[in-house]
Length: 87
Image (cartoon, rainbow, N blue to C red; front, side, top):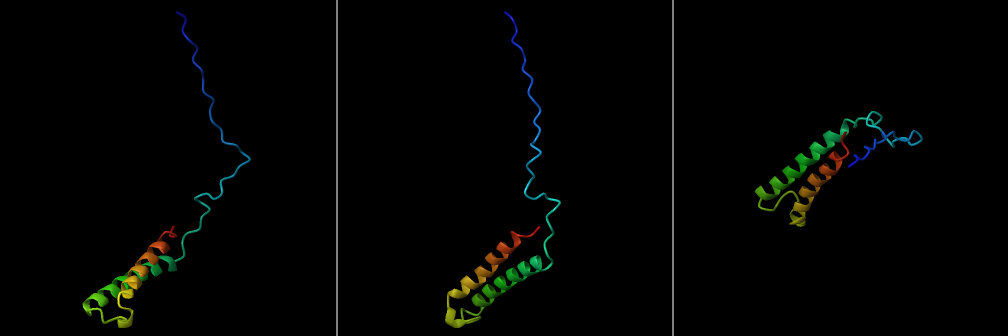
């Protein structure tokens, strides 16, 4: 029985007329304030929650009652959003 011929694959060459949108080398590093702000928000959020629980829900703002939890966790979630932009 005759042996079938082996086909050679062409080597891929990317098109030259299309440029990538942004290369890793052209991206600017993050500004210094970005990680500082994110860490500050994390610390403020944790401190807000600790003060809220240790003061038996009287401080930081007694009128907000359970909204104090939203403020504390909101600060921490905002810091995660900021850190997602960090390069």
